[in-house]
Image (tube, rainbow, N blue to C red):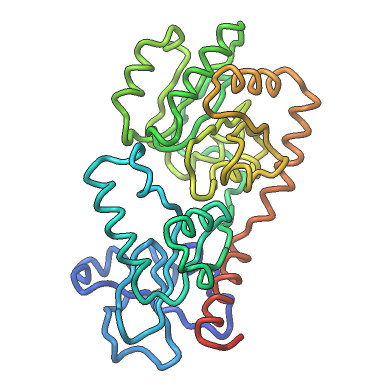
Length: 331
């Protein structure tokens, strides 16, 4: 949302007015503190011009009945029971179904993979689906603030430490790599999520637990340093809606090993080493090749530096505005 607001400012024929539910209007000042040059308004129908529309950029929709409505669906993870707590699984399906079965005028998705997932459950939306890829804007910068205490050589995993991110697979692949005598350490950067107990048990029982570093939350200003210093960015996730961390790593010159199939292959193209996320042996072999084959490593880096700039927030904003125009009948 913040990236769209920032880049919408370049669109001459577009006026953006962030709106806040009445129930949350008491938090107006806190919300405005993160908005670039915008003031938040309340949902009051009479305030909106005749050619206005409402866009819910985070799965949710309000303002029924008097404005064209657009919703962005980033992923369909709520339909994957094994990756959700029972109470969230049931509520998520109920909420998503309510939104997508309502009188929505357009649905924006951020990948072909997510588009296919929406159509799997809601085929009636086919003529209202619009693909607008997200962007990547992680810039190179020197480290700021306190040192993270990073080892000299490390493999980086950066995401919430949860079941769907395949953190157990990351640990098993790292163990297979270490058994071959590699000296690199593994840095797990992220807060705990669903399935944390199983991951923590795997970490505690790992024969290489002393070579695994958990950083928990990493401040935004330190992320570039974290990517840039990594020997490999390792992201064999089971399920994603897009894959911004992969593009961020590529843009900062880190070679990437990620999951074959699904959205991560869609986003990576031929710029990453693609692996079966269910095979620790295959993943360890891919990591070993990136760490030892300098020509292959450099080829991945150069391909990544070309791939990441294909996804920009400017293009995302332009494509989103085109959806607005279609809904309003201007194109």
